[in-house]
Length: 158
Image (cartoon, rainbow, N blue to C red; front, side, top):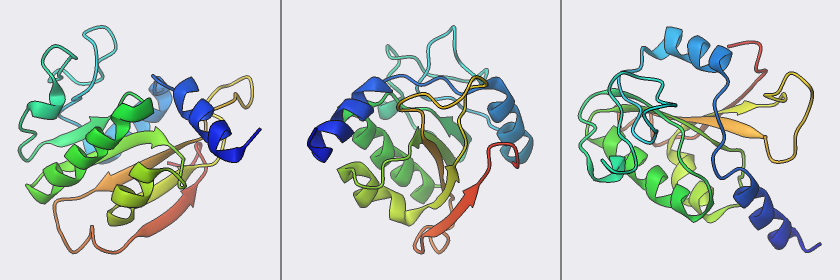
């Protein structure tokens, strides 16, 4: 299969990845999240959250600390653009996204953030196709967001 077709298939396969509770809890201890901008009422990880109806892309994230688990596929680019803009306006945004450094959205937006590659499977039963994920962190300090900081990490070592 042509590598571009394979990448597109992988992106569509992980349209809506769920963050494992143990991973969110570990990240929440570090960041103290106050907003989940792309969730449903059932899967929201923060009391303050936006659903598809409320459209988190059009909301002001202010200076909140945001946990963003965006829908995959073509929509991810708009969410990453919003994350970068919100950090420039004062928010801290932690993005739980596919680890896809060859995609257009990654090339355009991720170099401004800190990357933590989740190099282990997120499922207890082993590797699943399409579950390679990364955390991309955009902080409100523009100096921090100018130089890419790539830091691999094991999922068990948060």
